[in-house]
Length: 92
Image 1 (tube, rainbow, N blue to C red):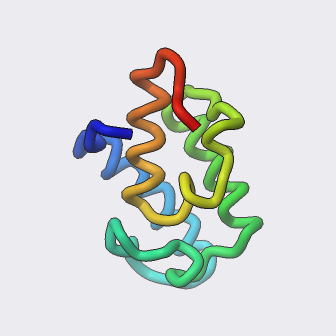
Image 2: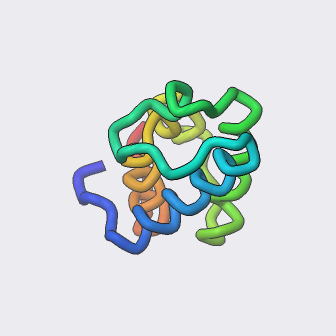
């Protein structure tokens, strides 16, 4: 994913994560490079986040991007969204 994500995608992604963390009683969004599991998200939270990302950005995440690396950090999620939104064929 060569292009860095736009500030708008990064901010919207952070807001989604912040909302899930708030439901768990955890305030604030993690840094872009913090592992989301270390910030307090469980595997079920990550599934819910994936669904929220698809709804927020009106995208369908291709199976090639449904992997732990794509959902590890805010930065990796934003980069994946950027790639999917600008997509032609995606590299796995």
